[in-house]
Length: 191
Image (cartoon, rainbow, N blue to C red; front, side, top):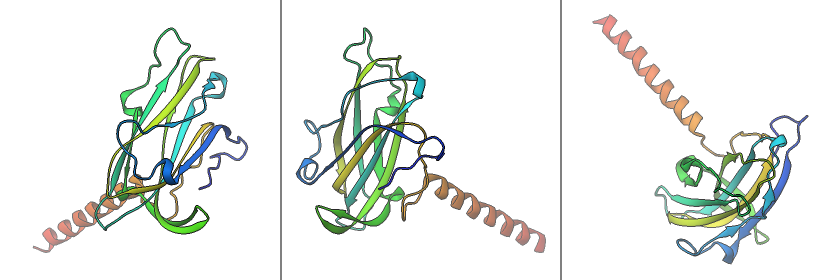
């Protein structure tokens, strides 16, 4: 899945781009499963570093599927641990906000559910940072590919093909409530 800059005049700078598929992620979950990214030195002049995760999975049934991914960030050479907000140490994947698409995996096209998630982080300048992801429990999702990119810059946050965004869902709910309110007022005036 393409990752493009939000502003074409300011291209993304990719620090690491890694994809895991097949035996690296299938059938794994829980303690001991880790996906390691290349360590890097943080450059505060380039702004926050963003971890962008693309998750592709199949669903065995029509039930809602979800998965958790733990993010472990360490600053091995720093005198103090990295200060990361607790909300940015986990990513939750849910089929309610995933799109269905056909992608090529292991040379063959497959129909999968896809999602893109991200967090941004800042560290003291020139801090060596290492990141590991752990695949935790999942329900009704069989991961087929996980692609993680570390970037400097703002990426285009448009929805992936077929993906329902949280903003789109909230707008639909707001429109439904507004419609019900208008119908209720109209009904009350008729009485």
